[in-house]
Length: 243
Image (cartoon, rainbow, N blue to C red; front, side, top):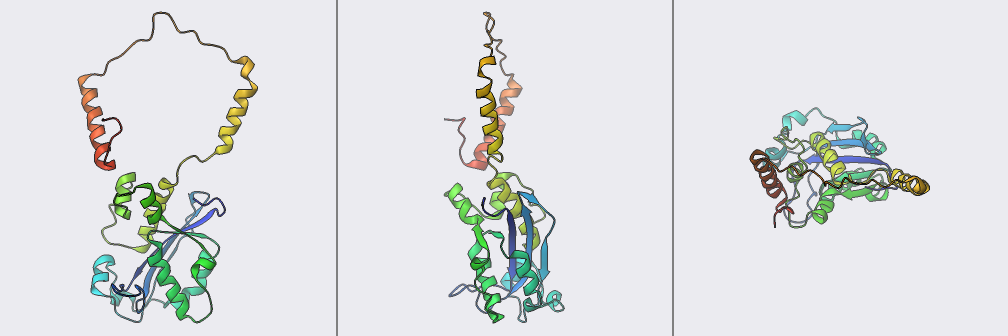
């Protein structure tokens, strides 16, 4: 997670489709934007969610992914109507996007069609690709959003179809898990200084000569342990406790 910018916007879009040959966004449009705000690793509830009229038909393949129909979009605003509100929401933030080149390509295409010299998104936002991060963390593994939900045991049962806001909410949970780590270095340093300052007061603990009591696991506990290792191996592909 970036330390220079404590405001992050986790973002996803749905579109009319994409080109398999050439530029993936050209001729297609954004039909849904979903974004959630994270400040200092906390979800603020200040979300941005819009459906947009694309002035073209949704490709059947795209409809099969997100289920957003042409009839539903007929009375929605066009991108130009919400562009300023969207820009105000994201400007200066770190955008966290899964497979960022896809969504940023569409966003820059939409901004360009406004002919307002807005510039590329990367000029006014920092962009973090959570898919690229996941591939570095888990090389050779599946790193789709669903796969990461399984890996981090995040509930994605409501994700029967892709939806921009739901996917952004799920990605925010995934991203916070991916970037968890240590959250308070200052606390650790204070603890070390306190220990050093009180070194003269440390007392040695003398263990009894009879030694420690050893309690062996029962058959049921061994079976439960093996079952847990099976789950670790299934989810992670390997298990350090089994050689």
